[in-house]
Amino acid sequence: MVTIGACVKEPGSSRNNKTGSWRTFKPILDKEKCIDCENCILFCPEGCINKDYDIDYDYCKGCGICAEECPVEAIKMERG
Amino acid sequence: MNISEKEFLAPGHRACAGCGATVGVRLALKALGKNTVAVSATGCLEVITTPYPETAWNIPWIHVAFENAAAVASGVERALKSQGKDAQVVAFAGDGGTADIGLQALSGAMERGHNLIYICYDNEAYMNTGVQRSGATPYGASTTTSPHGKESFGEDKPKKNIPMIMAAHGVPYVATASISFPEDFMKKVQKAKETDGPAYIHLHQPCTTGWGYDPSKTIELGRLAVETGSWILYEIEDGDFRVTYRPMERKMVDEYLLAQKRFKHLTQEERNRIQKNVDALCTELKI
Ligand SMILES: Cc1ncc(C[n+]2csc(CCOP(=O)(O)OP(=O)(O)O)c2C)c(N)n1
Ligand code: SF4
Ligand code: SF4
Ligand code: SF4
Ligand SMILES: [Mg+2]
Image (cartoon, rainbow over all chains, first blue to last red; front, side):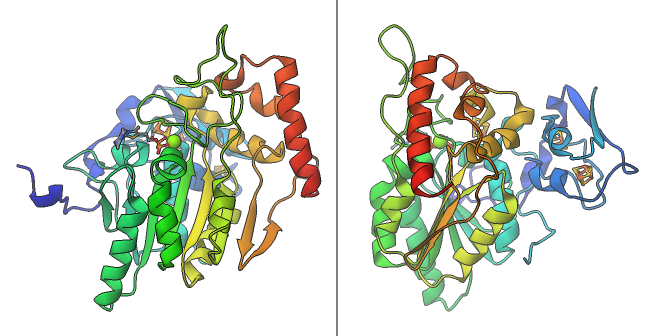
């Protein structure tokens, strides 16, 4: 049912939509190589890399920005 | 800089993989923090973040129409004020919603002096409806309504200078920014927040779908725009103009233009003309 004024009351409910299914290539992050620059966190359009550098594959669309912007090539794009 | 670790824009939104608009909004909200109310104009951002009955926003957010983000933000600001609530109001609108159809509402809000931040996320065309030109489309770009072909070489008018039009309103804070320079951008958002009165930020934002480049290159394209002098980062605080980033060595615009499908058709002569215009402005600003 449509709510009054099309009001949506649950913040962040787009989480119901798992965009990980869009992905062709998957970023694999090597924490050993990582130098904590936070580029990947700042530039991910999905905001799906957390402060411990775990990637949430439920939402990662595989755009490859994180791998492209990592200064030490700690992120590799793999098929799958 | 006090930057929130929290995410105020949830994943699951429908933006194209590699979308620069969502990067811009994430960064802006990190700089603004939780006590923020957002307003959006119709456009990609609104459509991708709020497919009914879902929302990606973790803060209060309202959408009304394509043309009136600034008017709605004005009303929200006054309503909060009259209720004695202290929250920052921020409007996000596309370049079409800002340079074209929303300009009148924006001018009015600036003139009335509302205490709000208006961020134009500029992907240089009407992306949501299929890449039609806007007043902010740059010279030479091919769009579906400024196509290149036998009779045309693409957009034949220069990009409308909205930040300077905003500055001419005499508002206390105006800045340009790029999603590829997050620290510079977030600093400006925080300055805008500290500003008493209207603040305007014009955010350059590459769009993989409309510009025609690989999604992984979104940040690189934004950086190239700045490094070639095609997009200049500056701020105007109480009338004082200051360039906030100067490339060590300015790159040739060809590097930026040839990386995108929308400029691929341009001849060397046409690209040289663009280089000349960029050179003239950069020389004036000592970039
Ligand atoms: C009055 C009106 N005219 C036309 C439209 C159709 N429309 C929706 S979004 C849009 C373009 C938005 O362009 P822009 O503001 O640059 O945002 P973008 O989609 O590029 O992010 C248009 C023409 C509309 N919603 N309302
Ligand atoms: S590939 Fe794209 S969506 Fe996935 S984690 Fe990297 S930046 Fe985020
Ligand atoms: S971009 Fe690379 S080095 Fe920087 S935080 Fe991410 S994984 Fe680590
Ligand atoms: S068309 Fe461009 S601005 Fe719109 S969602 Fe896709 S990448 Fe983002
Ligand atoms: Mg646009």
